[in-house]
Length: 232
Image (cartoon, rainbow, N blue to C red; front, side):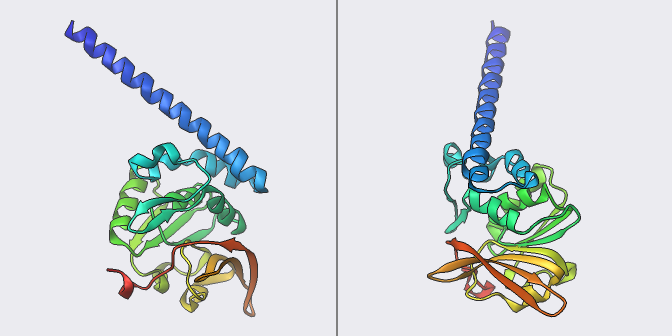
């Protein structure tokens, strides 16, 4: 009898887990089709990465049912995981290549880093909040992302040891583009960054042999990018 009950419990657990995974997969496909591809994102590398990365594993447990909604979600410490479309849009705007070495400022839960790591060779990501840096590192490691390196530190300083970078993606809004990050961008490199305080605009900045080209992309709303001295 005990063996029968145990077997039934295992079957029920397995069936429920499979159903949940199937449901999340359907939600992920719907997210890509309705929120991303329908808004003009056509790069199959980006769409494939968005289909593959399980966003529900990067949000708090109580928010898993909302993981694939068209909105940002809180992850604690007044931080958010960005709206899926914005993640895809920034990834697409960076025009990623398989051999790119990429710096991300603002790891958060690690979701965008995972999306980026599905496309590029190496992702270096910096998070100014130690708790988020530690949890993102553990999460990404558990998911098998051996091409992501997480650092707890001040994003305004960049990551000089690994510069120059082919791409820099900033997921928090500074009032102006930090010169240190511009300096760490390779010639021909691209930076996608939201700039502003009350009003924010997303920009694509390309470094040329003679300077920088700056292109406005769209209005956005990100949490402020802060210096280490402002973190409690």
